[in-house]
Image 1 (cartoon, helix red, strand yellow):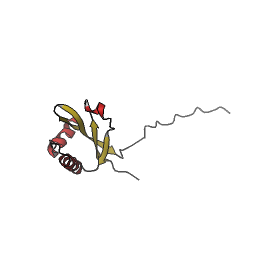
Image 2: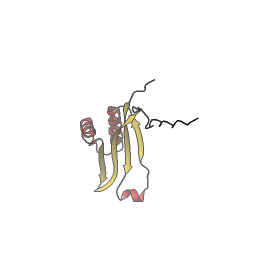
Image 3: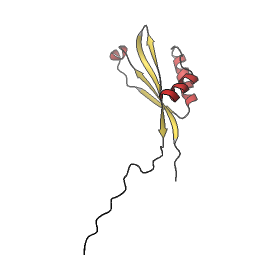
Image 4: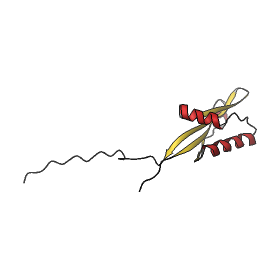
Length: 111
């Protein structure tokens, strides 16, 4: 039975900057199987909460291809508040040997 490798997208919202010291928050991580859906969800939540929307599909796709990840920082009056990072992850990677080496042969005992 073979499993198919699939790319999923990890979206992390991490609170950064001096304001994060005042209000401690753990990073929020969510996974999407479709990059377009991930970007649409980010854009809608940014707009819903009054943040500017500097993210677009082309910029994210290009950054993922060139750098392997995409990130965008958001600030208020020059103080960084949070960072959105999108990183591709491989689900069900192809595992040939699972890193297990071949068993060495045991020396034959004399009878």
